[in-house]
Length: 220
Image 1 (cartoon, rainbow, N blue to C red):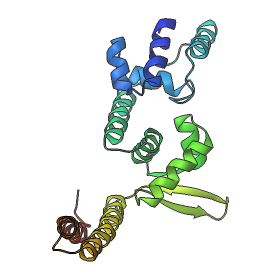
Image 2 (image 1 turned 135 degrees about the horizontal axis):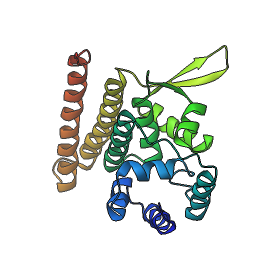
Image 3 (image 1 turned 180 degrees about the vertical axis):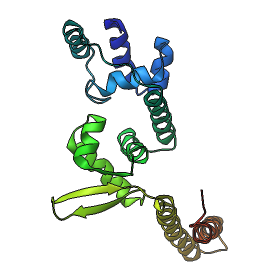
């Protein structure tokens, strides 16, 4: 990869572009861009000149990096695509990277230190991301009493818990909206609008809760 390629990668990251978009601009595989950024500080700390110097040092040692095996390339492609999809659905990029990193790990269990090393980001970034994901029910935290560390886990119940939490939050919003409509009066345009919106959200939330319970043990 040339110095100019690395400068274009940095420019794309600064513009908030995905790995896939940057790769298309460079006419390179998405996995190449993902690997280049990951091994040189991650998207928040990528510096093109520093990355180019690191590549030059590796070349001087005459120990070129091993090309990823076909399986490794597949995982990198899946990871990049999944992160891009999660970001498109509204997750912050770092949160998405942590979530997908856990989903693609061998047993769905990683410590904060393992996540930090694997994603090449600071422990503070991991702390922020796992806090958000835990709150949303997408992962859970386990304590390892022997080594005094937290282990973050994604399991078969992750989507169930996330769906229930989201539906409960929407149901609470529905109750507040309906109450506001009653307070303002159903004989007013605003009151009717709020009451109708609250009723809609209530039904959707209750349906989601019932559906989550019905399909919780759905086999793969």
